Image (cartoon, rainbow over all chains, first blue to last red; front, side, top):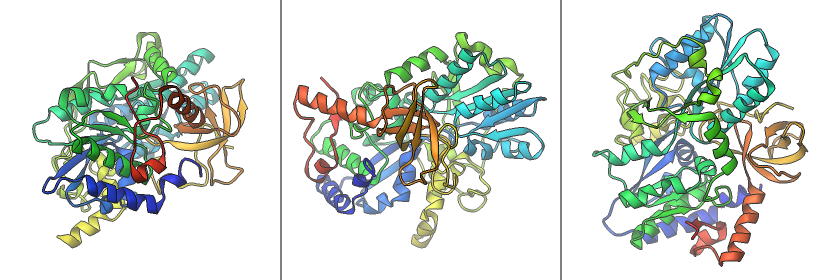
Length: 371
Length: 114
């Protein structure tokens, strides 16, 4: 397939691995973070870390939208879902995220009408088909997903659908990156920037990383050669003493992003003063809520929401994993009490989560053998 | 046909997160429904009957045969348009920054436009 096959070519992959080797300074340890959970998934699916020299370490960032949802927010969703007459819709992975007293899947088993959708537009269709029920869409995701929600709300408004509302938990990628860069226990040499978020926001929002923190950023695609090339580009910047934002994923990402998507987001959303991130705590201006113009479609205003902050389970070290301080297998409950079938932490829920990626692609077994 | 880019014939839990996150699926446009602002698309490699509706509000104009990047039932990028724009940028401002060796064969990369 065009745009895919050429980015999976084994010979080019070997050549890129050789190019990476040629950029390394002897004795130096390189540590770079892939911000996006999609990259984490690709890295373990294609075994990219096996191709890298031992002194090039990849750290997994906070870019899985399921993994960063705090338990209290799940409880809020369950609180709405259990209300009389509500059809609660959400993305599939969200169903299994544990709250303080079970997951949405558990609430469904108890009788709540909770339905998995692939697109917010599917939730709107359910609202059209059920005019006597209140249909709530639990919106999660970064700037990649937020335009879909915004577009859906605009269509709901245009069609006059009044039994549809949105519980908005969308987040933005730049504030947590800044928080990570301010973290004293994290030393990084560069970032593999999020490809599909950048399709929407463009490359410009990442310019603060080289400007303020002197770290290179390379926005990358999700095929194996995309990621290898991005690593080579970061290493080349370091070798040449440069530090800037480069775009490896030009076949999809325009430098200025998708202007229409940004416009629709600006119309429908506004920044929350604070939003809680799992493992990272409260980060200013990092979450989105519906703007005043769309307040009547805001489920948090339409329904009573518990809004209680719940601390993460003590055994769970998702926070350290999300900050790249520890590897998933270094968590005490990884692969024992916490598995994809029975997750304790959110990083084990979504297949984009670092723990699930390690677990599903055999890293757990390999690490155990090494030990 | 399934509405709004829902993948058919794939186990949603088997491979990767199809429901959220930064996943994007490349789909080819088979037909454009301008009244509903939708494209009827097929994912290359999928069964021909597995056509899906994709909202194209954010990437219009779209034509049959083009490739879209689809996320949660909404097209975020039209790869053929992006490629055309890159080619025109390259023609106007000279070649894109140098990419060495094997990377050169993969495709263009870009730094901040001046």
